Length: 162
Ligand SMILES: NC(=O)c1ccc[n+]([C@@H]2O[C@H](COP(=O)([O-])OP(=O)(O)OC[C@H]3O[C@@H](n4cnc5c(N)ncnc54)[C@H](OP(=O)(O)O)[C@@H]3O)[C@@H](O)[C@H]2O)c1
Image (cartoon, rainbow, N blue to C red; front, side, top):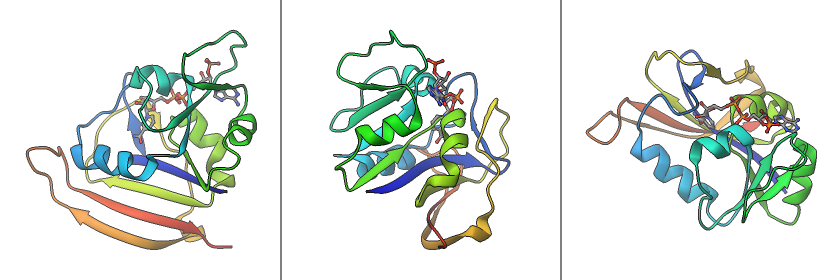
């Protein structure tokens, strides 16, 4: 099973503000949907509550320390390793955030689907520092801002150099 991480971040690593996303990028949401459809998606409890619903066509695995936490239609896991075990059998599993989950996952993932957002925005959730020299770019495409996308953005696929 390939373990992938998917994230959109601005120039300084900001990924979120006040529990939500600090931008609207329609193309990024569309790409997220295309990539994750049919797969397990692993997320922190805060990200699940910020999305506010189950994403159709995917198996949501929610990570929480709350033993009594329930979310109808989702799988509940109490650690990242339990979440990954719940996805066993899938050919690719996606870690979809947020910051706390990314921090725990960054050293054990195989692939990053990164959206670099060409903006400087303030926020309270950041992606962990990671050394891009450990990664090779296998795909990249740049896109301008338009009426459906707040900022120019670049989609990059990174594979860990073994
Ligand atoms: N730009 C992007 O691509 C992107 C993607 C996703 C999210 N975001 C943003 O990121 C922000 C949310 O990130 P966040 O760091 O605040 O929260 P988060 O990572 O989504 O969730 C944190 C929660 O996950 C649970 N958790 C974390 N580690 C755990 C472990 N080892 N074992 C069991 N449970 C664990 C805990 O839940 P309990 O408190 O229930 O125990 C913790 O409070 C939002 O602003 C969101 O919009 C951005």
